[in-house]
Image (cartoon, rainbow, N blue to C red; front, side, top):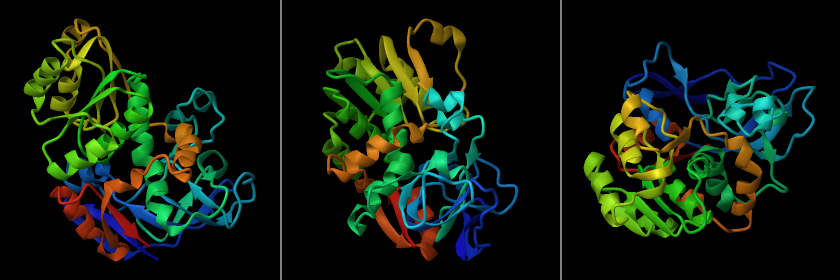
Length: 338
């Protein structure tokens, strides 16, 4: 088969790769219905994460089970399934507490920008839908596998509750779906931090009540101004830079909550400064598997449409253009048809 391989900064190639095969008896092989490019893929694409060897790309996926290992019990051939970017057994102590991305057997799932994918620990990682969904629902269900699950964790980790005031730092796909998640959790006021008109429109459609264009200390000051000097109850940091993290912390009221789901790059926290903010911090790799069953149901019953973040659709063999469009902010998120 052919799939996306990253060789180095700005060098994505669509080339021949080995077909995936059952390696462990707990594996499954999936024929992907669609795949996509994640905002976190842009870090190695831009050279922020060194690429030591050609690396298959992609970790968001949904599709039809084609083959399972002899020990797989809960999914079977022909089912439509969705999984997380980390494989987990969903039974270890960390999984039982809802942190499957810290599973004691966790394994990254990589290589999803291709027609086929091997998923380890299939029983713990994959969730099957009742029926094979229509093509029209594929973008929404694909979004559940990472970007919606991550946005949902951002809202959950920041203790978003009914009637609360929420600010979201970052207007990428995760930030936009963090807005949608906060709305679903009952937030009364949602402040989107964005400078991009198309993203602002989608943010408002998903539930944003205010838009702030300032960044850094100016952005935090603007949120304090909007909240009459108090700060937001919950701030969802969806970028992963030093500026965005401190912007989030400084925009939060004392006793409020900051979640951070953007992969950190160059983030350092001054303990003394943090000490006097009285802010709760919680984040990390989103335990998407925890939320999959409920989020799938919200999509299937038509409550939410997270797939609207896909504003560019390309055939898989044009994956390099998909990366370029996202890097240049011409696209929020690229859907790849297989």
